[in-house]
Length: 165
Image 1: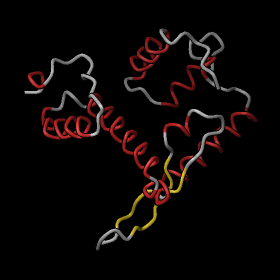
Image 2: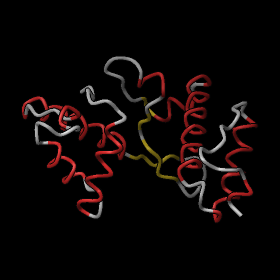
Image 3: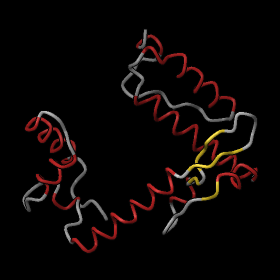
Image 4: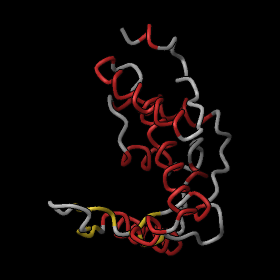
C-alpha cells in the first residue's frame, strides 16, 4: 500500500481528529478517513479483499515477532525471540525473518543485528529524551554507539544533557 496523500497533510489531519475526539484512536482515524474527501482517504486500502490479505500478512508478521524460544546461554535459561528481521531483509521485495540462533552464530549477521539494535536504541532515546530519569540509560546507549563505531545523532529539538537536568 502506498500513501498517496502529501505527508504534510497527515500530521495536521491527525491533530484535527485528536482534537475532535480528545484522544487519537485508530478506529476514529479509519472512520474519518473512510470519507472520500478526507486527506487520509488514500492512505488506506478500501478494497476488502486486498485489505484482508494485507491484514493476514500483518498477523503473520506479529506471530513471527512474538514467537520465543528458550536459549541455554547460562542458567537460568532466557526466553528470546526465535526470529529476527535484519535491515537488509526489510529492503528487498518480500523481505523476511532469520532464525535468531543462526544470526548470532554468523559474524556478519550478528554485526548487522548489533547495528540494528543500536539504531533502535537511539530511536527510543530520541522518543523519550525529555525523561531526565533515563539520562543514565541514554549515556549508556551513546557509549555503546561509540564503542561500535556509530556516532549517535543528537536528539531532535533538544539541547543535550542540560535539557534533561
